Amino acid sequence: MAAWFDWTVREFLERAASDAPTPGGGCAAALAGALGASMVCMVAALTRKKIPAGEERAGIEQILARGRELIAAFEHLGGEDMAAFEALIQAFRLPRGNEEEKCRRAEAVQEAVKRATIVPLEIARQSLATLELSLQVARVGSRNALSDAGVAAQLAAAALEAALLNVDINTPFLADAAFRDEMHEERDRLRRLRADLQAEVVRVIAGRLQEER
Image (cartoon, rainbow, N blue to C red; front, side, top):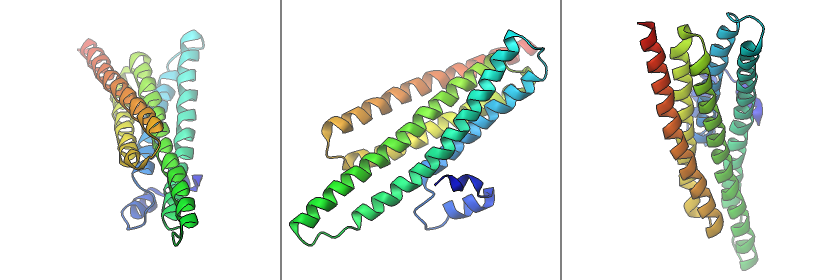
């Protein structure tokens, strides 16, 4: 399901704007996360050009490599999100003419809902990792690319919140109360960390811009 990454921008937008069930909000969140990670990579790549070989440059190269790993993760997760939603649709379409079919359908629906919850939660986790990386590059990246570091952070934050909305819409259908509570706890943790990190990136960039004056 990773072939969606090979669509043109126009093709993705046309599919997302259609009445087709996928790509939906989870995949859009993954795309926003990938864009954020790409901005991190750009700042790191521009910064690396200005730094001689040594420990500082090695740190920038680590950020660049991690950013590329995150882009690949979002590519995979966007495909997984589409597959999860399509599996959920198929589960809801299962017959329920007798008790055996009803039980089989209910089990399939629960497994599909769990998957459709876990995938966007993982998109949110990877978005948080992207936000953490944007903070690193905001601290050490080229001042000429500080705005790009900020864009990376804002895209990652938006991706996280968008992904968590896809968690929120699925958890009411979870019959397993313990699993549902676990999902909610992780959702709340990610939201708290997102708020702190996003504010810190804004503070760091504002401080570095002030130094330029």
